[in-house]
Image 1 (spheres, helix red, strand yellow):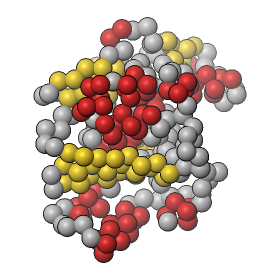
Image 2 (cartoon, helix red, strand yellow; image 1 turned 90 degrees about the vertical axis):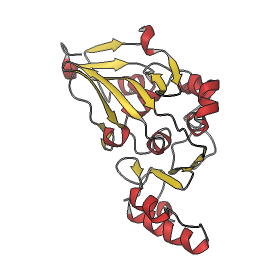
Image 3 (cartoon, one colour; image 1 turned 120 degrees about the vertical axis):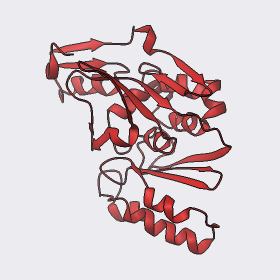
Length: 246
């Protein structure tokens, strides 16, 4: 990657890369295949260190993992909503976030879980919050020669519950029109939203609004208004701006 720079693309799951090459949207001179690197194809969990998901682990491997189902069910369920079963056999979590689609199904759960991204490049290794990873529609923070080697999800030591909800034109095999992830840890509520801004969004101001309060109908209405103020939905082929706001 350092040698070929912008002339090269990484082949991981390949679900977007292969389609892009086929449709002549991208024409890389070189394709760097990382699928055979064994260190990148692991799911590991430590009570203190949390969940580590390697770059080549597929979405089906994540959703089928007993460790993920037991400790991070919201992530397991979100992985099941991406594309078809056949797509999930090839597509990876790292591909899903590196593609940086505002509608990526795995992004909202990762945001509320406080996930981090492990990046290796010519200058060494660094770990950043996933909240800093997305910089725009189809854009991420990666620089020339850098790759994501794993996603790290910290341990949530207190009891918690959460859900990822996806609104789409069809029940299956569709991008989200709107995606919402919510988790509750004791008296803390975390909220993130997908497909309603140029990047997936963590609704920090709305979370602050809910802190320490009893949920009732009036507060829910106020919460909806607050969340809407934190995003900037647009009209596109999947939905109108007004429908997303509703």
